[in-house]
Length: 168
Image (cartoon, rainbow, N blue to C red; front, side, top):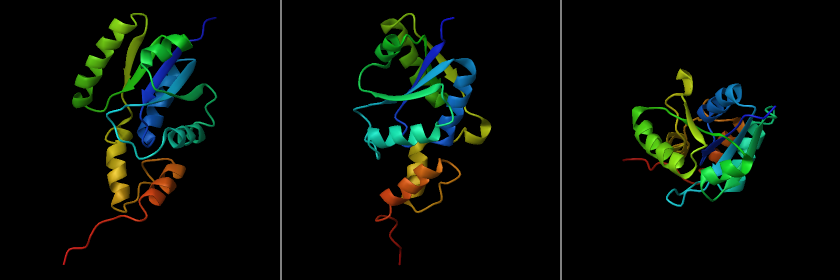
């Protein structure tokens, strides 16, 4: 029987429990899921691709059907090479949908046999974003309930020499 493969691309800078929730949901639908650390030239990242891959691999060590890779080209091209028939995208809000819908239609033009599947994280992770988590960490807040332990430790290290200035 043919494996049902999908790709879940993102910057994962850093990976959050919201991302992991979408991965778990996708694994209920697909036999194999490639979690793709994608390069986006318009995004400045805090962690290197190698660090993000390591965070994901460690977070997914108990999920043998989840594979982790990095990619600098078009996601649909990676999907073709892996013989995947779907791209998974997480949606949090209507503002996400506008962008994601445009991207899904463009991907359909580029690769008509690769569908886009939208999954929403559970309500407990719905509001999470990597940007918000980095801001909390920068301001010395506790992010341990939003990200895997290794990510919380590494965020603390990255931001250990920065912080808020006190007002007098």
